[in-house]
Length: 382
Image (cartoon, rainbow, N blue to C red; front, side):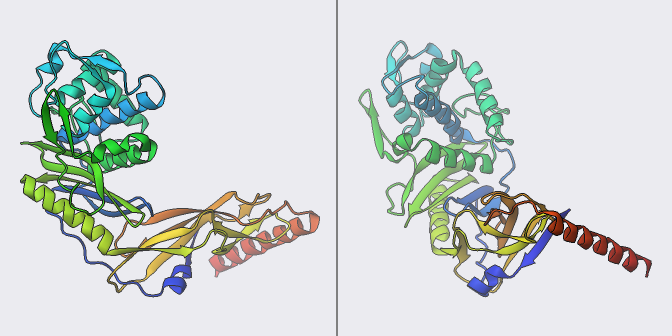
């Protein structure tokens, strides 16, 4: 049967830990995630689908990056500019109908200039029509587990069926950073010139010296001002999403505040090394009665800078664990909670092989089971 085992392992290693003051964001919805330790630092209305505005261009870019990575297109592939693309309003790359544009320039037009026209060109180039591309966006979102996202167009143009949650946008940012590192550098370009027109990157954090290197701003009257951002300092990378702010200046200030809070109020600490035994768990029908449970990789946690609460940790596993067991088999899950941060689940694996027992070990196991059942019935009868 499933069993949860409370442990004091981390309290011994770290001792009493203070709890950081809760960050109070002005954004209507927000999500902050530490990629180094797989920790959600903040989630405010993070699963509510909201108008994403141009932040949804990340989905268009993700699909284009997939096409580049699997060889369907190259950076030098040219797409034609249709009348529909050239007529798009809002932020534009200022593409001319009938012209041809390389995939690389379209990426820069979308990422740096937030070109709605460039998004339509990509959609038509990959799927024939923007409507077909929107269906593809929905299919990919579903396949990726983005359960709070729906798409009606490639650009984020206002539409009641264009919705994304902060968590989905954060996931998409993480995916772009990790799956397409060869193309991620486009997000940190400060400006891009097309057809004699130079436009600056709308990301307000890029030139502040705080490690910001992406990803995408967004704004419509309904959505307010939003930003999907990422920054890296001392090897730690965070991804954050904010939406519903009232002005460009509020977006810039809130983005910088979140970056500073994320890096100044938490310290990354390796608390358990790979191979260290956290607990000995019971084995069913094995030649030995227990097996060591150990993490497959070093366990690093984010420790709040100011504190008064302990870490809580517990192990959940199927009791007992049936032999035979191979070293490296996943046998349990360690759930760690630090203060108000989202609990983190860490897989635990067997430290050593445990062969199935012979006659005597199996006899001892049978006797233990009989005794356990007898004692349980006796306790229930008393």
